[in-house]
Image (cartoon, rainbow, N blue to C red; front, side, top):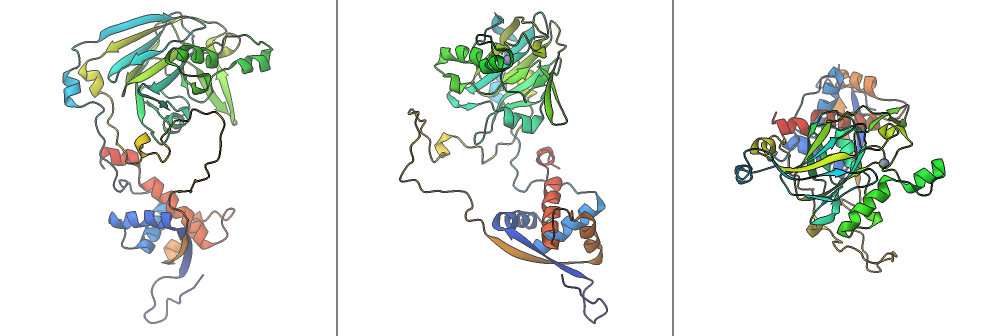
Length: 386
Ligand SMILES: [Zn+2]
């Protein structure tokens, strides 16, 4: 730390210098702020972060280069939509079963309680490439453990696309935290070796399309009441009544696979199994147009951009002797950025420095800068255009 004597002629008002150790990616982020006109140089970005963090009021700024959100359906698609909902097919999904349903882009899948209190597990695949499937982890990160109306069902990185839009949800009791129940769960807890379970029900339903039990993915659990208390996930009894329903609008052609959760000896479906009604509709333009616009990110990649695009057919893994690693932005290189701080900025650093984590000014300041950056540059805000 360098202390400057303010009383010397020509001295600045700065009292302190802090040196941050930043790698090339972290510097790139500061440079984005500079390019966006937020600050004149890297040191100014750091000082801006300090000053705003100190006030507790962080100015909102768009993410630099954020893509403009695009409507889910374009004008010709809206024009081709029917004037009213058209029912294409419907069936009762019986206890112990699941069924594959091809839902074309723009069609709507409705799942409705018949008797009530029935949890419905749900898998979803890109119909034209089953390797793109709904990912509960990504969905959970974006919408929390209990998503509801207005949320999306997302596929895994690097595709990371919205597969379906949860347009209607009369109860808003859903879960994306618990994995599907399995045969081994029932054996381990109850000693039962033959019992209905979502993993095997999904596998049997998906077999119609040639998928294997390994292709079953963790489910979106409709009508399942869950929470977390003291870090422990819990399942509660549920309150779905006859007529409660969810409606899912397909944003691309998908294979949707609902199944009746096999759990009749846990509170998931109030210790009972009941059928649900499944319907598939064509929907009018107003419903298609109600899907929120989403940005199309350059990093949402498809197999044409994969370094290894070929799906393996051999089960055993063998090392590729010609493999050359090609990790992004490697090697990671760090460099030093020294910033002169005013007395006020220095006071903010002292107040926010987290001494239990950081022993140097630079490390404490690096945390403040990137915490500020994320708080200041919100994708949601950029989507709103402010
Ligand atoms: Zn289950």
